Image (cartoon, rainbow, N blue to C red; front, top):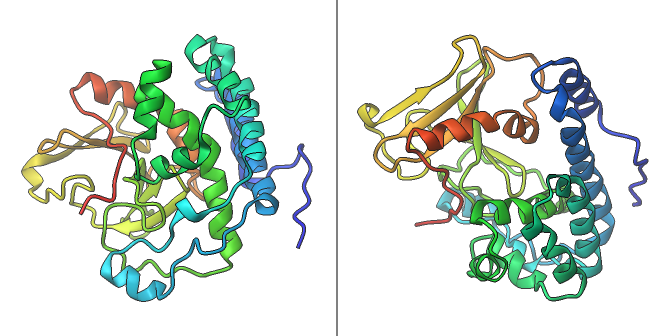
Length: 293
């Protein structure tokens, strides 16, 4: 089945979100870049539906693997043409190089010449191998920025793989803090409006799963004396959950204080960059790995 699309087309929820940003004085200056990032993400996913081969990506006996807390996908087996990845990387860099980061720009010819090994990169993004560390040393790019660059390329591709599987994944029995698909630690969470249940979000494959509310998803701490949160505005839906045992933080969207409709984590993550800066200033850090047993 062919998935046709227009570059001018976005789903209604994304169009609505972009319109909201353009009318909000806090985000007007960044609205154009956010819009371009959202379009890139969506168009990459749609294109990937025609470009990738998901043979052997999804492991057999998925329900029993979920109960045992074992990954239900192996994205290292996902086949993607290097020409497609190179093109997507170049397009992504056109969006972000307006900031004139020379080190990031140095990656463009390396990708186009085939110097970057995408198979090793793909493995590193699902926590297998140290290729990202090698690239960091070679190009001198700060680790979180380097991860962010390539996660933005692969996230819509991994998401497309899940969609192409045609499977319905019941994650109600998944108890681990890391993503059941790619094994990454969560990047954000949300508190459901009606029930108050906590759902974690994986930035690397755009997956979401339920997790215990009063428990650190990084070290497993459950003593409430070591679990806390802070915010800048009591009326804001955004807060930062912190663990004083491992000094990790996780940005959270409280749906009871937010607008109605589906939470678009990619947008919320961009909009709350100021909370990342504040959390780091307060001595907390973001966990970027996962699948630690």
